[in-house]
Image: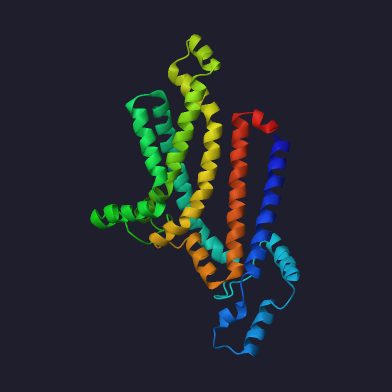
Length: 313
């Protein structure tokens, strides 16, 4: 098991290095005259040159990359070119908000999807067809449309929840529930649809296998066979899909946070990209990529614990 974790961890580090390197060169080579963008069009050529020199933009790009990489390894990503705030502090302050929404949406997706998937697989009639239709519809509807519909119905018309803003759970649990429920629901719809179909298919496949008939012939209750053995074997593919949905929810959070005016990492990424604030964009890229690598590593470990064959793959 240790060798398996080391191999996955090494692959994750390589992936993180490749992503950060590509992002750095793409951003710097395609950024244009950054110093003039910071100072404005009315700035003199001398002022622009001095600003570029102060930012280190007058040096060769390989030298800039080497300095950035050396600092990034120690957790220092520089300061924002527009606000002067430390990138690490800016990203960390927003990351907790987005993580709260994405983790909440992931857990809700997993719980609802497992329940619906098991029901659809074990009740192969009208209930199965209804679940499949709802899954297809839920996967097809864009997240921002779901968000707008939830705001109109539950926030504006019924006034059950707050339409915009965010309150931290540590500040007010009631306020957090009022502001985080709608974004979480909007984020998790596509995840529920995808994981439900995966759980349904995996459970149907396992119910038809020989080991299930053997367990039933020994007199084990159907519920015990289903929840202890079938779901264990069906959990691997579902976890893989859930990991993909977790990554997708980070992308969806960029739009959802704009709709609900939530100060998360998606909002800061949009603002920094529009301004051309490359240090801040790089900080968002590295932190997001690190989270993706960590989540995939955890999913691989869970799959290996459920299915020892995964360790040999």
